[in-house]
Every structure is written in C-alpha cells, then in structure tokens.
Image 1 (cartoon, rainbow, N blue to C red):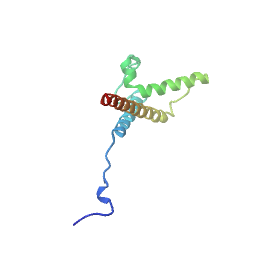
Image 2: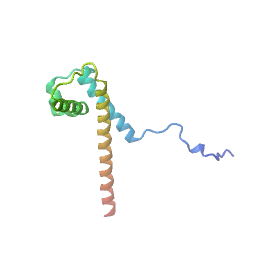
Image 3: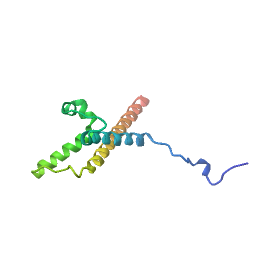
Image 4: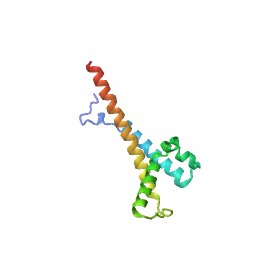
Length: 123
C-alpha cells in the first residue's frame, strides 16, 4: 500500500493559470502593444485618423488614457513636458491600465452572470 500521510499527493506541482490571471496578462499585453505602437512605432505604423477614430481609441485605449493624463498634467502645469528621454514609465502605466481594465471588465461580467443565474434559479 502506497498511501501518503503527509498530504503531498494532493499538491499540484504545476499550478494552473486562473481565468483572471490570463485576462490580466492579456490586458497588460494590450497596454504594452498600445505603447509600442504610439511611442516606438512598432510593430506597425498608424496614422492620426486611425488613432482618433473610435476603433483606434478602443484598440489603443490604455496608452490613450496615459496620453490624456499627461495632457491634463501639462495643462495644469502650464507647460509641456519633454518625455523624449524618459518614457519607460509610460509603458508601465499603459500595461497597468490595460491589465486593470480587462480584469475589471472580467470581474464585472462574472458578477452580472452570477446575479442573473441566481435570479433565474430562484424563480
């Protein structure tokens, strides 16, 4: 008989990725893609009409929110900022916004789905 009494047989050596973790990682990638497109010009070039369109705004939303925040800070300071040499933090901010946005949408959708299914099951 090969019974383990220490509980190690129930331990998962390779933890599974949760849906929330995958969505959060996808959102971080979304933010980094927007940063790469708008600041680095890679992996493809976009023109201003696409960036300002509804579809372009949604595709580049995390980076656009960072741009709007920078613009607001510039207006409040009464001057423009020189970000040509120091813009690594913009990538971090865009990836954080993308991760938070998709994680929030996922959690909201899950909550709505649970509430809807609870109402239907109680009828």
